[in-house]
Structure formats: structure tokens, C-alpha cells
Image 1: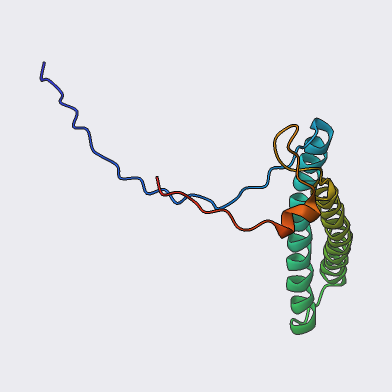
Image 2: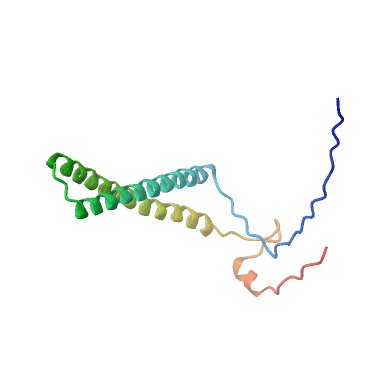
Length: 138
């Protein structure tokens, strides 16, 4: 059996430090809300775009093609109307869901408490008056 040799490669990692980082506490309920809204928004947008595509495609067909059979014409018309209704319904749900999602994020961001270590808290008004801190090169 032949021996397999593994060659280790070096990966150069370049790190750029952040000047500051703001961390927000998020409850499990808020995470569940964000998860639910994100999935719902994505699905609504997908179905809305699909319904709009079907509606526009069939509208172009109905306006440009002379369909002899009434049965086929009304079938196309029915599917066309359903496509536009799906697009309208899902579009409204997407728009409202987007607002709910932004509302949850804004509610999380609005929770601003004192900054700093326990016993040495800094109020947000005091934070604006502090001089910028120098970052030591490491």
C-alpha cells in the first residue's frame, strides 16, 4: 500500500481590529420573533414575485395572441387574475412583515442602558463628551 503524505499549507490571516463594538442583549422571545418574521418575509416576497411574473406573462399573452377557443381564453384569464391576486396579497404581507421586522430591531436598539463596568457605568450623555481612546498596536 502506498503511503500518503499530507502537506501542511500555511494560511496567512490578516486581522483588522474594530475601534469599538456595540452589543445588544436579545431575549429568546425576540429571537423567535425575528426568526418568524424573516422566514415569513422571504416566503412572501418569493411568492409575490412569482405571482407577478405569472400575471404579467399571461397578460402579455392575452393582449398579443388571438385565442380562438373561449375555454382556453378564460382559463388564461383566470390564471392571470389569480397570479395578480397572489402578487397583491403576498406583496402586502411582505410590506407589513418588513415593518414588523424593523420594529423588533428598533425595539432592541432602543434599549440603551449605562455603558461600562459595574460600579463605573457611563451615561450616554457622558459618553459623547469623552475624548477618543487611543488604540495600542498589538
